[in-house]
Image 1 (cartoon, rainbow, N blue to C red):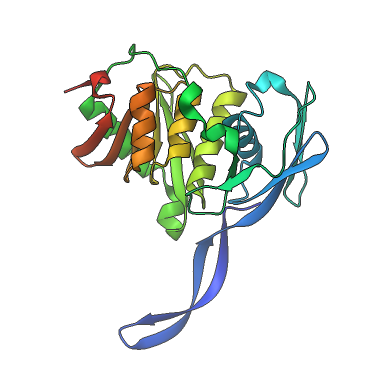
Image 2 (image 1 turned 180 degrees about the vertical axis):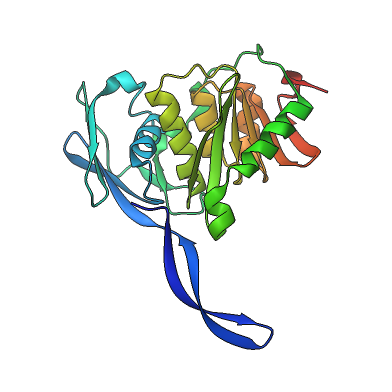
Length: 256
């Protein structure tokens, strides 16, 4: 499946209207089946759907690592079939709508962040290096530059290239980088999540569960995300643009 589509539009400019072709972001429905049962359907950019499915299940606490997966495959119609090594029971009714830009959902249990352990203070990073990584991140946003219709997310791991994905949903973009990290068993104790979207509570929880110590956005953070970040010792940064950023928590990791 493609991440963009070409459509015909009417373009109005300076009092004139003309026929044009326009490139827009693709949005499709995918269904995730877990051990033969339908688990959820997600509206997303229909690329890297294995990473999306794995990242979503990990973020919900359904799987603890990629070793829990016995097999994963997908159909041309966008269905993803995942079988785990052990039997998993889940309640299809225990769902809440998130504050994401799409009507995504998570299991109620994943909102219980009280049980999250505090992140270690081991990582230190220069403030200007964070801004440099954010500027590099912005240059990767090819689909956004073409369409203006997607969010992007990346993992910055010391000594490695950015792990970068785009999606029409900001939660989906995060889940794709989470899925990549889980599938490739990355050591994330010194990694940074970079995102274009608003940081809500679910995204702060995702970073904390992955033991990623720094979460940085081009946009703002919610008060609940900040509360979670303070409780778990997560370095939370918003409005990272050009030569400035807002540090909501975890400033002890940043060298100025």
